[in-house]
Figure 1 (cartoon, rainbow, N blue to C red):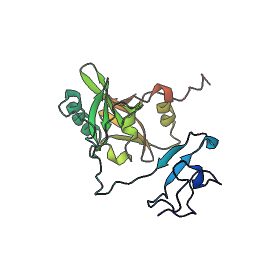
Figure 2 (tube, helix red, strand yellow):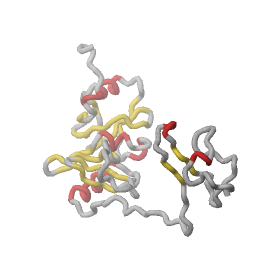
Figure 3 (tube, rainbow, N blue to C red):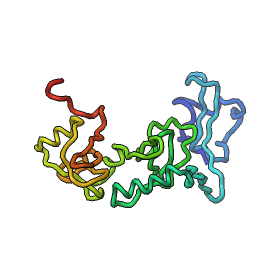
Length: 212
């Protein structure tokens, strides 16, 4: 039941101002706690707003979720590439977006109609008939311990500065190798013949002393 203290309209509003209520002696016998009339003085035209609640059980709308593709060739090959580089379990589902295989989290809602700049983690670039890992997938590793091959360096190591400039550095082993500083992954490259071919992104590289 509405009481005389319930706010209805702007301050100073009275029920006698509303057509149809001028002869009403008692407040209407329905709850008006969450109601409001927007009068011309408030920028409206007598609009009436009421918050209503439907009786009955609450039914939660269930989304169908993102339509994952599980039979894409590049996505299947990416699984092999991922475990060639990492020991840690794959933390999502690989999906192809253009020329990139991205790792999307499970349980992702539909992305249709949304301006998504970057979904998930960029896992690999599709280069003709092969896949090459992205910088982002190595940076997503929680520590160098999750990587199969690691070239760990001290923060003051001259070869670290060389790597950050995009230069090749000495490295044993063979294959995709993470570069870390104190166990924290900084980038990666491909080891072969005693050197590490640098895959540090050009836009992140330090300038050489000559160019500074």
